[in-house]
Length: 406
Image 1 (cartoon, rainbow, N blue to C red):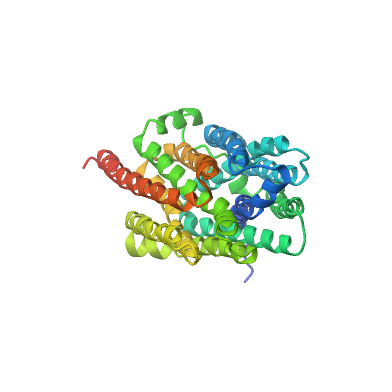
Image 2 (image 1 turned 90 degrees about the vertical axis):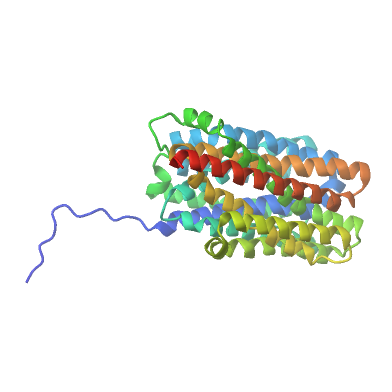
């Protein structure tokens, strides 16, 4: 018997893994871009004759980009679609790293920090929003942030190795820019292929994106989530940016040991994030965050009180691992669907502000009191993180009860 062919064949749906793979590589790229700086910081200090205080201008300059991303990522995504926004962001990030590599003056390098902040902020907010709102991929949020850890542990390892074989820090940034530029190629190919999840608009309601953003910012859950992530990422970035300098310049740890110990810190974070699905199933998101905060206090206390060891660094990374993705995973469960893009945009961009603001403050403190003050400063920040988490849990519980009529 011959089969009759349908006159209207169904269009082939592109596989989900293409968009997921691009998202994973985007997070590897921003991890490499952010974490590589920690190992290169002493070389930058020497090249431009900077102090721990003046070098923080590089962190501060990124804040303008992060704030702009906070205000515009949901709006840009709703107008351009996720793909074109990612293409823009990847181009900005690559351009910033190339400028770092070629900049003849410190002022130009500082100016390029704004482009880096904007690129990272747009990638972070856009992909987090798309993933948590898609039922097919929401369960991969921990894996997504695990791939940030892959990039974050690769950045210091690549920088340490290239410095050890005689390359300058500028040449290292050239290599990192080449790695990140592959994201531009991948997104451009997907757009030319017209991959659906990258070409469609991200708008989720009839209310304009700007209106939904303003509504989300009136909700205490959103503001507290942003505040919590600001402190959390501030701790994460401070460890990544300053731990190598503390180990080498204040504790006389050999450079290779210190460099690879920073990679061990990011390895702990990566392992913890790949295990997030297990923790969410076994403990639930709130309990997972609570236990992570307690383990973080233990690890930071050990790094402060036991200066001759570095094993606390991977423990700190493991403790930090679940906090960011668990907060993202909870966002659609705590808010109406239409408010999620604006809320995620604000929360992730506040996290990026923390990544620049808190390491900058720590640098100024170290300039006044010495590098050994940095491990001490991490402990009260972790205590503040615990307080914000408990406050957010109470606030979110009340918000959910009001929405469900309980």
